[in-house]
Length: 315
Ligand code: COA
Image (cartoon, rainbow, N blue to C red; front, side, top):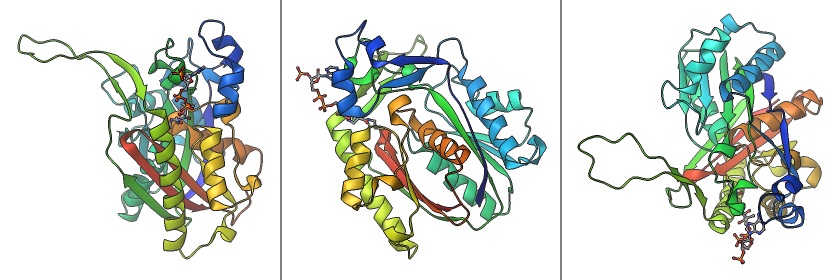
């Protein structure tokens, strides 16, 4: 497949580190050096499905297609206000799409997992123009009394339209199941038969373990994927790394021994927007005119699961 359009949408409320330090024992002096984050967009009166639909509309317009050309729609989402139907159905209704749609919940690498489904659907001859929307509101998952998690996240939606082409060069998916490293529980409806303890627990994370996994998995995925596709680091134009933490991105860059100019970032004013992070970054770079035909983009993302994934796309 080939990416023919990108879009993104962000909540209007911008929350700076200084604003958080007004109600929590933290500071810009702690957050910025450890994460690279200065501010993040946070949902206030927006609905996540509206942000997802806005990002999709922009991507479809950017692609030159019209909505009726889309014949498959994948939505990557970890949490929304809906338990059912899937967010893909809710966004489809807003867009007026009637093509098949599914949700994937693969946390931060969700954009690449969705790409893999899209490519397989395309290769099976079942779809030609596929919309992927990653819509996430992780600021509704952490406790805003927990300074070790809430400062890390931001909300938003990113979208891309994929169509016929031979530009998706390779994808690598990887799973290291360890649900205790990042998780959130929610209590379900009681029944007369429930005999077990359930509780609502906001997002919990073993930050240092996740940091190590992210750096190790990303380096391994990138190098293995380049080798599988007979490419070298010299062929790579840009590394589109999941924007979780500037120090994770720096560690990956140091390990690969690649120049900073190949690593576009937007972490400082977005924070970690889970699976929306890669397509938001992609859209921002695209709209700045950074990519030229033939550029090789290497995507790499990692997160809850623990899952990681990488993809090589020729622009
Ligand atoms: N402000 C001030 N102090 C904070 C703080 C904050 N926002 N968050 C944590 N601290 C404190 C802790 O309470 C702890 O204090 P203590 O030593 O008195 O107990 C101290 O800072 C060190 O905490 P620790 O969690 O060990 O910090 P760290 O150096 O591991 O940094 C992260 C924390 C989250 C920045 C770091 O682990 C990280 O970046 N992990 C990866 C997380 C990530 O990106 N996850 C998403 C991947 S998809």
